[in-house]
Every structure is written in C-alpha cells, then in structure tokens.
Image (cartoon, rainbow, N blue to C red; front, side):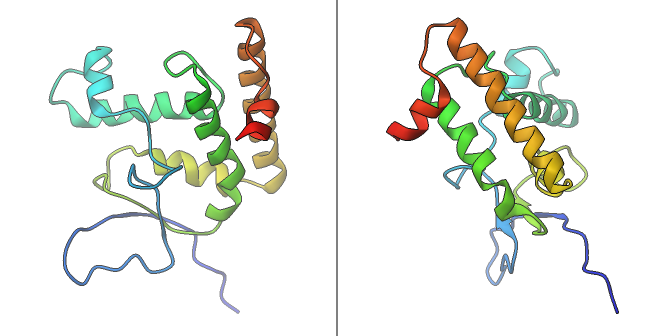
Length: 155
C-alpha cells in the first residue's frame, strides 16, 4: 500500500499545453489566495535592496505570514480583513493539494505558508484560524470598529 504524495508548490506556466491538473492556483489572479504584498513593498520598506529578489521574496512572505495570522499593520481596513477571513475559511480546500504560483521554485513564496497552514494537523489549523480572528477582532475593537463576525454577516 503506497502513501499519498505530499503536496508541493508548483510554478505556474503560461505556455501552450501547460495544465494545472489537481493543483490550486494561489496567485493574484484568484479572488482570495494571492499575496497582497508585492516585491515592491519589500524594496519600499527597505526590507531588501532593489534587485535582491531572494531577500524581497523572503520579506513579502514574512509579511504575508504575519498578515494571515491577523497582523493589521499594513492593511487595516475591512476589505483586507474580509480577504484574510476568506483565506482562513478556505484553508481546508487546500489540504493535500499542490499549490501553483508564478514564483520561481527555490524562492520563498506565500504558497509555502498556505501549504503549512492547510496541511497542519486539523486541530492546529483550527487553532491558527481562531488565533488570527481573535487578533483581528482585538485590533478592530481598539480602533472602535465592528468585530469581524459582523463584517462576515454583512458581506
């Protein structure tokens, strides 16, 4: 009896004949799964020297990891809170699937974060989601904003 292959990150190709197969595309062309942080953010915030793509990728993946965990430092409005919440709601869809992004293999990619969260033990994934939502709600409360649940209900 063989064990199922572990999911991997694959590079999205724009060539004739390329097929995604059973993988899930997680780039900015998707409504929910794209990383809102661009390489330009890393350069602008001086997290990487312009042209140092490897360092810039690491920086935006770190920003994405923090954002997904509920950090509202750079995106603190309802639109991005709802986007994060949709990602958290849909993590289960990514479990066991290859994730496809245009990032070069070998460079850090937000798909790695999504794979880690989605393929963790289900109880651990649920804990990540709960903690992220609590963090967002605490931040929203400090700013006098409605809780995330009310945003979800209205959307």
